[in-house]
Image (tube, rainbow, N blue to C red):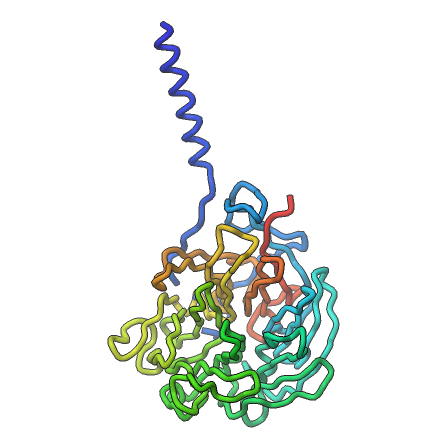
Length: 394
């Protein structure tokens, strides 16, 4: 009798342990699939207090290795087609608005102030696009920006309130495929994502700055170790690059708009040819570098990108994120050391409309820019907004 009771107790404990294990953290591994044209869906209203995305986990301190519950909150609202985002040393952000030419300073409480307005001569997808801070900002106070003029796209640098100094000109411009993302890499050099400006032959032409990822020094010169001598081109065969992000090992990844079939995320190699317009998506063979993942164009139109590093969301550490316009979601990709995508998930799907950019904030959270007032979205009264994905406060 005593033996039977002991066996029953062990079985009860085992069943309880199994129930706890089965109720733990899960993710939605969406099937792979995310161009700019049109807006097929309307957004659900994201309330000002925030919502919790698909992550359902036991809350814990961001300093621990375990997963944390993630919530989405609204940092700021009432912006006009925000495009670029860079964080100042004190934690405030500089945000560029594509159509107005304004640079706004946004604090963590959502207060906004115009601090600069750059000459903006673009139309359609052109305008004031990417923004970045000098790696030595605390000593030189230099801000870098990419914008469209009547003749080209260009990169300038300036101190807030001062006249811009042009450091790179001659990037092809058009009403679409203007690229525009700029970011300093771990090597201290400035990387520039450009588009083919509607002329696909630009992408394979090493004498054109269109359809490329460019690499220049902070003052606009060509680094001596660039793959093509006296040429700012770092990689080519791109259609429209709008996302740049490095992992902890210094490997660059980029998001890219396809045409009718496939959008891409690429692992960037110096001197690599990524195939456009000869190849869209996979199938490059020995001549072209294949993407690490493709999305259908209806589920992405991938713009800005980030890789979470020393972030506040442990279960997403090292993951690649790209904000999607037509796809209206934030894609999360887990990438192994060989550059293979082992997991992917769609976040914010249907919650906030078109998404333009994602960046890691100093506190380890992710800030996401909506793009519903870009003449292709369906804005709600508070658009455009900056959303924050971070550990739940409760």
